[in-house]
Image (cartoon, rainbow, N blue to C red; front, side, top):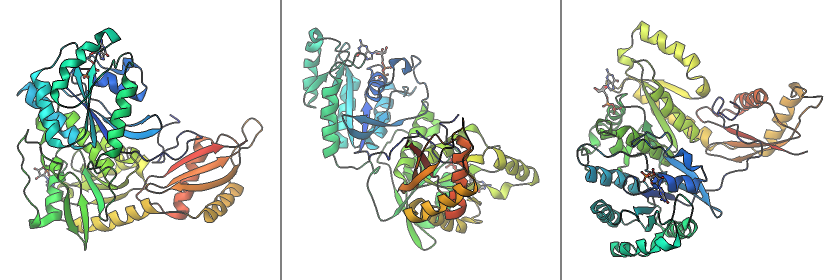
Length: 455
Ligand code: GDP
Ligand code: GDP
């Protein structure tokens, strides 16, 4: 549809303005059924109907852009997680633990109807160990007469329990004021916002495409072995890896190593980790297994990276296994499934043999350069002026929308705002994107174009 990403550019609202910078990452954690999803939906202003009754439903998005009272932040929803067969309490605790590690502050939700449980206390121990600021929400306190239910939660030692009704909205404002206050003051350890001098790389792809193998190949002998035991959650491990004369920060390499997909409920998990790694990154290396058919899951990971506005390098791994048949299959797919990322660089390599892995660094440098690139306003307008006189917008109802002025509002990724006298058709915006790419490069980065209508 018209709102979807076309060829990698976010053709969003016609009058969208540059987004504010989020102040940090807030996670909502707690046992199943306490009302986390209801609370998340309430905060996001979505209808409660979005809450799924089926436990363990895999959600598509796990980290949301949220806004409250003028403050922008990231909200991590852990409501879709299912208990693990191996032990409900421990699984919940470790799932919550990952979410907490990926956040800067936490809202811990308990159920006022049920009262305090062992699992709650277990989660509290983990929260305390994490050192992250916690705001305590006692949910299902649907009216003033039920406020007494909050009393017993004082003994958790997390400070004032906020009685709320996620369902009806009662008390949610006060809770968020406090939680966002603590988020603003918190150390930003999630890494979503920490600027560093090293370029941050997320190595992503569905299980078995060869992420660990590539990481090992790039790191050579120097890297530390990462503990692989399921359930032994620890901090996400970022590793500095020297590739082609330069140090790069590879994000959450523990998540790459750990075989989360073997644990039940783990699709959601690894999707959360992928999303979190992408958001912390500047560039995503998206891996595919070229010897296998490309799956929906492959394409979904790629879309996550593009939608997040990251620089992208597509890596077609296991090239040592390619025969004529697979090669042709891939070339056909390239023309169809990869249509929206024709701007991305593609590196065919073998993590196993090391063949062509020396081409990665140049591709990454190129993509990041595009991601950082800024076109001066004068040049941009001169160019769009030429484009427009050679190819004016088609007449619509006797009128001809004209571009008045354009500016590159931001970089990382490049984002253009075009001021026009009327709605610019989809096809025309796509044409503008193609023209901008031809003129200015931008290989390896999505670009976003929004149109602002001035009568
Ligand atoms: P999650 O598993 O923690 O994400 O919990 P859900 O958001 O799916 O909610 C679990 C159940 O509690 C659902 O049946 C909700 O309708 C119900 N619930 C959620 N919030 C409230 C509330 O504020 N009051 C009451 N009475 N029920 C609620
Ligand atoms: P991950 O789940 O994405 O981390 O994938 P792994 O790195 O664990 O690789 C999955 C399987 O593919 C392992 O058996 C690897 O040995 C194999 N593999 C990875 N890269 C290559 C490659 O370039 N060529 C071949 N033939 N096998 C590979």
